[in-house]
Amino acid sequence: MAIRWLTLVGFCLIGMAASWADDAPPRIKPEEARKFVDQKVEVVFEVKHAKHSEKRKTVFLDSEEDFRSSRNLGVSITERGLADLKTKKSIGKPEEYFANKKVRVIGTVVIREENAYIDVDTAEQIGLAP
Image 1 (tube, rainbow, N blue to C red):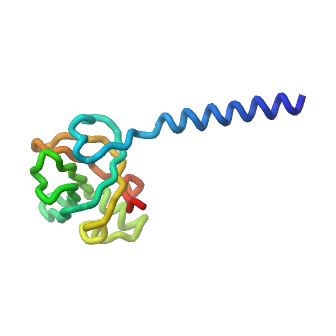
Image 2 (image 1 turned 135 degrees about the horizontal axis):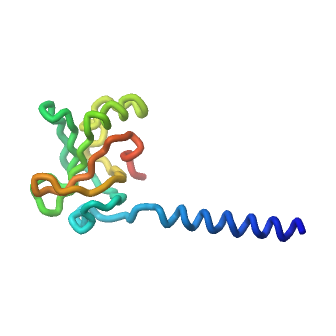
Image 3 (image 1 turned 180 degrees about the horizontal axis):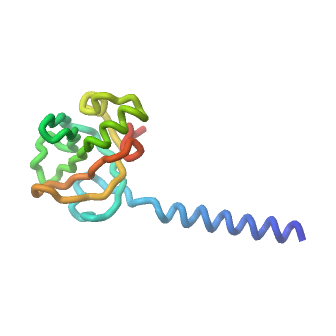
């Protein structure tokens, strides 16, 4: 009886792990972002351009040097995201911290001003990639 119970529990755990894996967003390349508008994705890329817009209270990280390039994916770290990064990861200037480094970002692709972006509102959405 105990063996049947353990087998049943084992199959349930395997099924749950498989369903968790299915919930992971697809990993895409930055230049593919326009094909995934309004979808949650994971993307890894080297930050080739970074800037802090005081006016918008946002930090922008770009996958291309020219942020207007159709191949560019911009990451916009919102005011809320900036505060969360500072609190949870002690990153006060993400434009300096992430510049010229490989990052991993999870979020929903949006089109704004004809450019593809992922908005980062929480520290968990962004980090350095191995």
